[in-house]
Image (cartoon, rainbow, N blue to C red):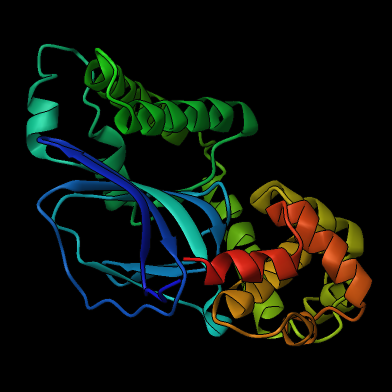
Length: 287
């Protein structure tokens, strides 16, 4: 299997908009740039930093990042260069001109996010379920060649914009306080990534950040969708996956990703990826 800095699972462009399913499997360092189109990032897993107009964002799984037209930005990976998976949508201005007959301005969330200088938000679970379902519909329709697939994908793209605007404007007026909480969770995420190979416990992390175990568990679950333990396990498995992908032995990947027990590592890896580490290594070499 070839090592690539960016593995593009699926990409489709159709005139006024593009859909990409990206998997950043290796370290990345992109120069500052800007586009003459709007961008939507829906983060699925992994760790990455996005800097937009001088503001740095460290999204958690389920977070959505809105980038307005002509805003300067660049992505760069965090410590350990953990894999990051996300959906990316890019929309040309012509996409919205086709909708000018409607009363709603579907670029409103981009403009307001730029004005407020805070572009990252986390939809509630109900909203996220609808957004995720719409994204998967777009991906599915653009992968097949059945009659009307482009029409369904295009209409789903419009639906996605409506859902995003609703989710964005449903953020309560207490958003500033929530942003501060999210920043603290992001700091905890960075701490976990930097100490992933060490012993990490809920008690130790709570003590490090001067919060109670209950508060840490509750806030972490709210913003990432995972308990601290689940998040640590997923991160360690992501590191092990990358090591195996790069040709390291199963034993080495187990130890260097922070697992202390080999049998637990084997069980966790199979649960997460659907196969044993040794079978994954064999299938990797078959490419």
